[in-house]
Length: 233
Ligand SMILES: Nc1nc2c(ncn2[C@@H]2O[C@H](COP(=O)(O)OP(=O)(O)O)[C@@H](O)[C@H]2O)c(=O)[nH]1
Ligand SMILES: [Mg+2]
Image (cartoon, rainbow, N blue to C red):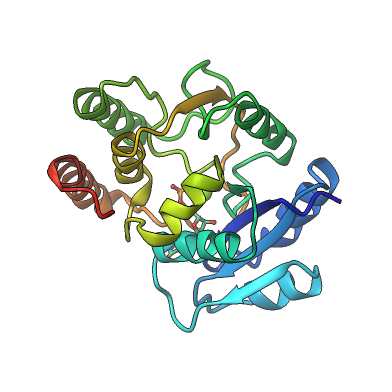
């Protein structure tokens, strides 16, 4: 077993889907250790993850996706993992595509993003989400000079240097787009990999229709602020 790779699953009320998510990863990517960061769920997410003998960290209260993911990166950093892969707890990210992300790291990329929009296959998300993604993609192009199609994808693999960065600094809410700006600032090389995604397999998305306006404004401002901010270290 190669214990150098950690799969980080941020999970908030994912009791309906967390068991098959863990099972599928064990089947399709058995070389990875699995960490579920239970983000103050009010359902049985933690119990189910414990039964599956994954590593489980229970945050004392709901802290948001960014804090949950960063907790995972801190765990990866402290325990010496060389690679960390973020996978949703809702079944959207197919385990049989994980190896494509790690292969990109093997080729020397620092970050691999599983992308829905490089080749238009599988689950394409809702109209407004796709529109938002287009806008963020243009914004990232403007700020970072790099074309990234699926800026909000949370299906990502990163190497040890990026684990170290994210263990120290990671955005709080709606973190995916903002994190790209940090990566660019620190000159990490990002590769997008076409993958098939699915609709979430149960529970509810964190982003309701009415959150979308806030989401667009918040992420746009955060990207611009991060772009002009000095490096932390
Ligand atoms: N909704 C929500 N999800 C969280 C939170 N903390 C961690 N997560 C997990 O983060 C992952 C991504 O969230 P999700 O709702 O699927 O976002 P989406 O895929 O963009 O619709 C899921 O595995 C969630 O369970 C939180 O505070 N709220
Ligand atoms: Mg999801």
